[in-house]
Image 1 (cartoon, rainbow, N blue to C red):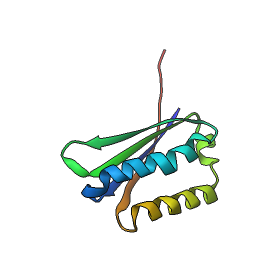
Image 2 (tube, rainbow, N blue to C red):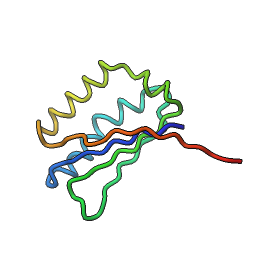
Image 3 (tube, rainbow, N blue to C red):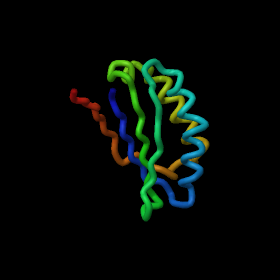
Image 4 (cartoon, rainbow, N blue to C red):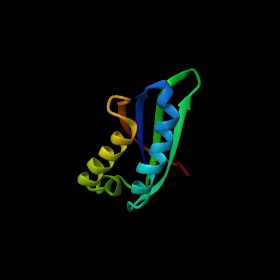
Length: 101
């Protein structure tokens, strides 16, 4: 399993809208992709301007096979819903889950 970790800075007054719009716009697109296993949204107490998306993929190859044009189109819809400048991606990381017998 592969974890896609995305960290965002969000205008604090728009954090809940960010979460709601992400669920409406991004989650259905990702859910249709081969290898998508699920997604969680993490918020940190005391950091009202941070949102973390933890997306689980079956394999890295399936994750990276999501067409770039679909990602660009979906991001444009999301930015339109949120308003330009209301959020910024601060980090994008990749992790693999290892299990031992």
